[in-house]
Image (cartoon, rainbow, N blue to C red; front, top):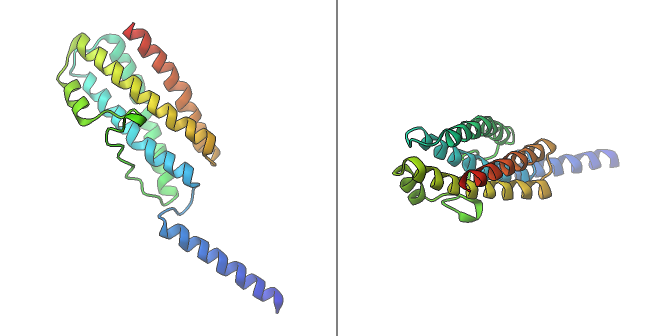
Amino acid sequence: MGGIVRVMKRSAAAVLALLVLAACGNGGGDPDDVAFAQGMMPHHQQALEMVALVEDADASPEVVDLASRIAAAQEPEIATLRGWLEEWDADNSGHDHGGDAAMGMATEDDLEALADLTGTEFDERWLTLMIAHHEGAVAMAEEQIAEGDDPEVTALAESVVESQQAEITEMKDLLA
């Protein structure tokens, strides 16, 4: 009889744990992994908004090339992040950083002013904003590397650090 009671207690504890996870909107995934995905998705989406401005801005060939590489890297990462959030049954609408300078996010005013620029003025402002944006992404990714649990999520974060650090260097060189 004692064995049945132990099994029932374990089952009850497991059901309780599942209920707590469901109530939190997190059907799986470490909280740090979920927070990284929820934060990085809108961060990448804003980078794509900035990339979209390049087309009509008479930007230099170097900025056009860089923007296309950023889009090529971040579009599939957004799909991966969204997939993980769906797999974890977590909110995948992302967190609105709302121009959070700590995360490198541009404000709506920054984006509107950028959209009004062309040529060299556009290039310089776009590069400056994108450097700050990438620095915010690197900080988020480094936090994931330090705190995260899921090796796949951490591998993506490591990739973000490596690729965006290289792009930061490239952008600084373009500004020099």
